[in-house]
Image (cartoon, rainbow, N blue to C red; front, side, top):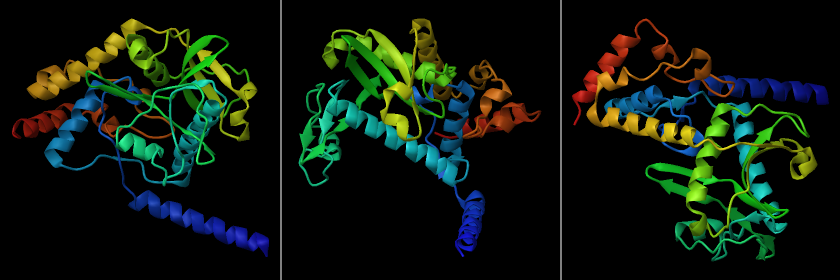
Length: 300
């Protein structure tokens, strides 16, 4: 009987996935100059903004699926729990708010009312619950982002970014290009704002690869990989943003043609495929882009 029930539920879930595959449309955020969006693809940035301005339609990512939901929700939850318990352990430096929505110091209320408390290492309790972390927000000349954490342990100040992973322990994990760009950009913001953040220095800049299973609160199962910040890379990211904005402001097809077409393998991963993959790598690319700019120029 139980096997029959499991088979029935399995078939029902397959049906739900097929419905979602054909009917769901998940709006994507427009490409922006933010840490999680680095490195910027000039073509994607410009054409996405042109499409939004000319068609007034939201771009859509791949359809909803339980696997997509799982990785997104799980990653968010693990980040939240890591921050909460590292704060209670007294090693995560930051601002803290209450978990209780009815408390005047509830995390959401503090952020909404811009009542951010002074940062400290030990989060402590409120309403009988460990406090939750309020991530440091970055806003700098059009650049934005949120810092996962600044750890203080063994007399070291460590700028860190948490990434969930299927690997654990001391496995060497090749750092994806976008992970490096993201943390690299945060580093140059932090060292420029040490006084504002009230910290003396940054000794290490590290990506913490945390297992997705129940070992996520066991640091011996983490892989910690340091990066060596590269200022020239940050300058290049900043200049790419300015070049994209200039192209949009001038509505210049000539400037757009100066942007490199990325290798096709960079335009797709296991989570999503760039909506421009069939534009940038098509014989009809020039005509399509020309028409998009023509319509864009006709708009005020």
